Length: 155
Figure 1 (cartoon, rainbow, N blue to C red):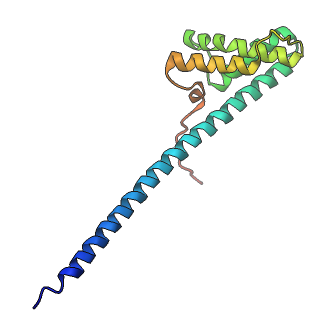
Figure 2: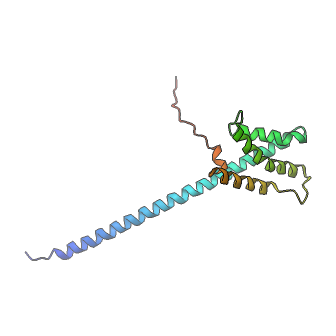
Figure 3: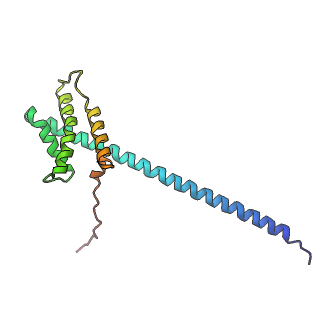
């Protein structure tokens, strides 16, 4: 028998190599897509947590009976959101660092903001930067709470 099978073996080897290259390219694309989706999900979660924080603080400030109680009320609401029933010294420090944002928000809400008043957004961004530099993590990660799945039992 002549060696007529060698061209077909070479063809099969070429197709195997092409198939393997296509598989590797697909795996790389899937990994990159998964990383991009995870990054976008993190940005989305942070944006909604920030929105919920600002919305809750603004509501607490608006519902305060006296202007002097607006910021302490907002601090209390945020502590509750974080699950800080009795804040530790470290947690009090975080709330103290967040207070300029709450004050700016209350000032803006009362419409007495002067041009020299720090904007609430700028104060919040400054707080977020401080927290990240201080802890190495995002402030809004504190809002992540693992809730274990419990089996549903019907009686």
